[in-house]
Image (cartoon, rainbow, N blue to C red; front, side, top):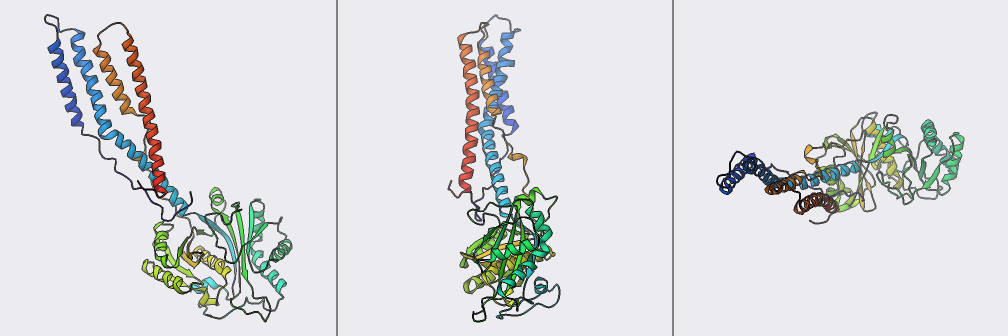
Length: 471
């Protein structure tokens, strides 16, 4: 079942209290009085009362009927409802816990390298080091690489990106579950990557997938139809204005490398690998519905709202920008806003990876959770970058437990047949006795089958409601 942000949630029901014990006391007293009265009224004149036949009706048949009646009252007034409520509540707990886990899934950022026209871009934009850069509308180049030729310039950029990651890349390649995803402007870029890979003496050669500049990452789902969800992904994204002096330069240059780990792999190796930050499942929205989308994102409690301290957005225009800024303002979030477009000039579509890398780095630097808003296929995509995953705190309650074995129903049937058998004072086993035993066993089996069938139907109903069906 695909993930839904507006997932219908089942409401936990109250089981309620069983009937008062005084009801059972009254039932026992009444049945015992009736049994005593009937025994006295039907007792043959002149027959001694100090015999088993006299006391059988009082100490055996009466208690058996009263206990059976008490079991019937419990089942009818509380037991069946309590069972059905426990089934629904347990399934609601499972569905909600599964949904919360899915909402908090994503990819771990094991390391990243950022090349931007302004050094220490993230630290300066947050005021941690130096002064925030201000270059709105200015198309900027990567420092120190302006004079290189196109291919050698890309080679230099990629070598600069990969060199700090060599130890981790070598380890990732040995896992034999590695994918390199590039988002650049040239089809032949994979050849340059191969040359750099070989020069750095990295083991083997990874499978390379070229993403279009507009491709949006799916941090908690398949990124593309043939995606095998590898343990490691290396994302290389860049924009270089190297098409010649006569080609207009509309966007500033950048380059970024992110080494990502899959959520299941990092969970299985949580004692050995610790990511620097996490990029969590995002939500897509139409531009005029960003406020509702942000409410759903925050309602999933991927992180405590008070821990969201920074807000990043880039390349948002018109309605998308105004609606997003308004949604953040109306949400009550107390955040500082950061716009790479104002710091290093207009951004290319692939620069979404620059924003993600900056947000993840600042989360790693202890600057709180980072909210990211970027253009998406529908209009706007919202994501959170956090330092640590938030555990799902949905404790189990003893009231969720239930058994498909119908104890109360079995007690009722068994005591009822026992009382009926005691009414027969014959000392010889008869066909009626055999028939009663068979009927008793069939009744036990019927109650068990009914309980199992009912529990399965309730579970199916819970799943149907969770998919958006009506009751």
